[in-house]
Image 1 (cartoon, one colour):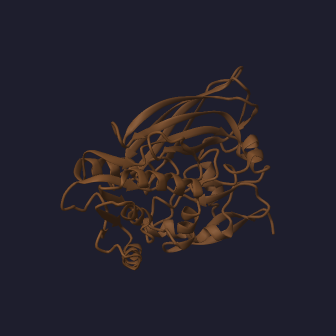
Image 2 (tube, helix red, strand yellow):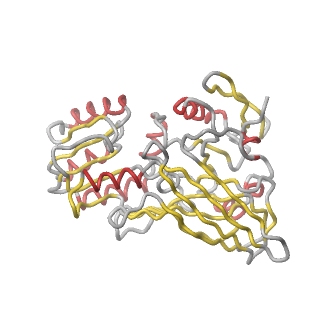
Image 3 (cartoon, helix red, strand yellow):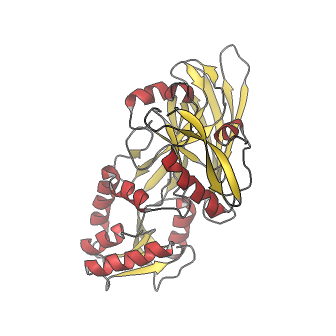
Length: 373
């Protein structure tokens, strides 16, 4: 099979050509960032459950803070993992919120079979729209996205603190931040254009269906974080943090963060890998999705399709903007910056990624990813 080829996927009302790739011969490939949309399936759940670092950190935090407390579990999922863990740890009562009806139904059955139906109540809907009989003392959630707030953690947990959790209540996780590193895509993927393996196309179709049309959906990079050789070829700079979310502190779901990356090696700057650092509990070492194997994978922010040559000491200064979209939950992201290179003119660069706004094939990257027929 060719390393890169054009396939076809179903979008509402018509077919769309898409850049596809052979999974076995491409060191880096794309996946749709699906956590922002109601498209989870058994495979996605299994990937999360098998993430030992993620599971162990959450398990330790729940066992530490749940005993004797009333608990809110936002996004409990079909397995109700943290609702059950809180009940087993000695929580007085758990309210388990799930927006996907099928997942809520399965969660009720799993809770009943585990013998905790009297201590766990499944509430179907969005946490931003439900009411509880009284404020709880602890909130646990796994709605951190490929970017820290991309699944709506900032807005959702701000609302939970305002309406559903008592003053001084404990939030798990404790803190997140989106991270950024300069990226050389051509070197990372050995000169081949990025594409979706055929197994990923159904997820892209589901994202398009959930929005009602094709659009420039957010994509994530597979094959980078867990491969030191690929990372060495791909990452060109130091790492900076933007979009800080203090779930147990002064939480701001929206904002503008100024940042500067300094290039540490020579290469062709094509964009940013955007990951996240997550402190599940206050005294934890953070989970780092740019450098550690994880069920969270870095998102790709394309800035220069052909790549701009850079050397050590060059700088990329940018403002990173987070604005909650018109659904009141999921953020839209924007980036505006300047590349400063010795002996070259300043190059203005920008990127935007919305949750569901109009716009398809709006940049060279997306015109390559979804070529016209």
